Length: 251
Image 1 (cartoon, rainbow, N blue to C red):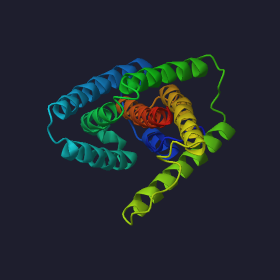
Image 2 (image 1 turned 60 degrees about the vertical axis):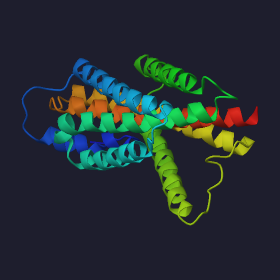
Image 3 (image 1 turned 30 degrees about the vertical axis):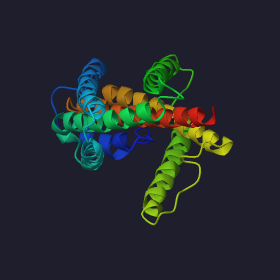
Image 4 (image 1 turned 180 degrees about the horizontal axis):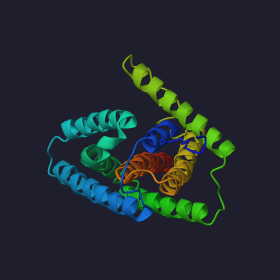
């Protein structure tokens, strides 16, 4: 069904159509999804606190950061094809991303201590402010997840993903892609656009969860929906942190 289309690869059309075609008992609910999202967020905070503390104790957290990023990516790929495993793998993803985020946040907090001493707290506050604002815009119908809207956001998200993937590949050859880390006006505009696209993906995530509930998706999709929402929020936080660092460099 065309309604199940999202810029977030974790909440795609094929996943929902496949699960709805399978026999199941108890159905997915919004409250259940929200509760599971809360559990995942607590797990992220717990593991992030571990690497944050370790970093400020002078310990090498690079293995935790890299390991968390790699494990998180692998789980995201696996769950894209096997959502039934979300109840088991989503918590592992949350812990892995927490290790990654804690280390990254500690780096930014240390690197920009002189120019932006509260950069991490600002990024956290802005991230959750954006999440709440986008939920309000969606709930009150101010921004609607129309087919055209979904197609545009999906294309923009795919474009950003390809750009970042190319940047990673070129980095192995000591070639830096422009815009990603530059604090120039063009670099800041690029980050603003990416933050906006990440924020608009939240609209698609909310729509997917609501449609999944309305269509009677199986109970385990609550974990999958919570996982998909977490994926977007992690992305949004990283992009906001990068944007704030660019502003700090210009001061």
